[in-house]
Length: 309
Image (cartoon, rainbow, N blue to C red):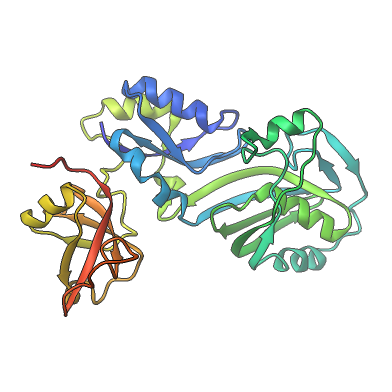
């Protein structure tokens, strides 16, 4: 089985827990996910089965959309409702205008310091392990982009919001930073990932319905080809497919890519089976060798899914 499953993750399970359940249901050991959700969070989790695990990087890079609640006046050691309370403050005097100004300040490109309670590693050790030991280490800020950060409702001390953000954005850190900016502190109360790229939670399969969906004649999830609608398609000939199968680059007429935008392309013979994911390069390996012929563009495969003949 080589599929991309869009799962609606329930609260209380880690992303690894979901992967373990999918392994049992599909009887496939090769299962992974693209983009971790905290146990307390719900919503879209992209789960990759079989050869589809080799597509993980492309889903991780997609924008994510969230809906959640910030609880003002209480900070926790994990920046969410799962942690221990570190401080409390009276947030009753904070106005909606101040809240909206604070949210607006975090829109756009910025740098964010990852939380200690995270899966990021220092010298091979996850930060959350160090945090459990009471250790706090310096974390380098990372570039992130946030857009569409909107306050939906205010019922003090809770603020409901929605947002779209780049990979690597910690929403609970954003909640804590907003609380700090308002001078009363805060943490993330609830969080739902509503979309990953074009995959929306409304079309996701609830985990408790997955076994039934897998047994259905209609199937579930997406083929590897259909799961990449964000990549322009390049149709290749059988000869080009053979070259790609051995890792060789192909040269296509520049007109075939004239109206296509994007770094990566999904390569297919018939528009249903994914032959490879390719990347346009000026040189065979991106760093040397002969340039493509005049009027041609070279595409180098970065993931190949067909066997050499």
